[in-house]
Image (tube, rainbow, N blue to C red; front, side, top):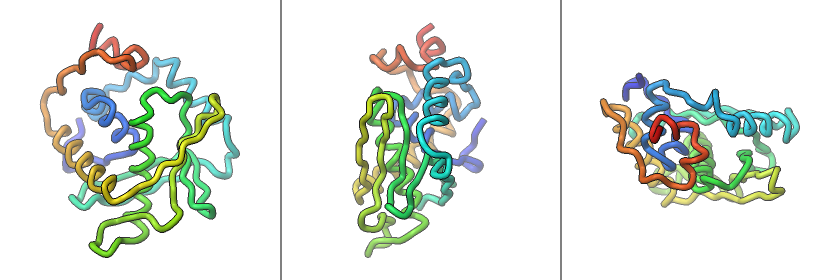
Length: 188
């Protein structure tokens, strides 16, 4: 079980939380359903085979303003061009994907520079990109001060979630639940 004192919030956990707090709570408790998921296996294969190895897998660590340890495992980066890439197989759950990329941009900002009020913001021109190779589509992601505030709030909420003894209630069944590796655990 993860406690707030040894909690490390990563991009995937932020994405889980934005999608479904129950999924985030279960994963913080070491309940991983993805190893049995064909959808996740396809995503891993896509990550391994889509882009040049030289640009892959950058890890960034930082500390949130509230002291929470943060870690990001970015699919690939082109730092010379100022682009962090996250590869996804489809646009389902796209909003959580966007927040995952914003989280990575925030980690970079926490390590790079601060704005006039000491708020971390990325430098000019730095951006994220969601890559959908199977769809032959990309989406540019930016981080602004409102996103930074929302990410700090999300990290605080995840920190609170880690202290809860019981999981949050199930969501009213949504379309993405059918594809979720945790669907049987929640609704089975």
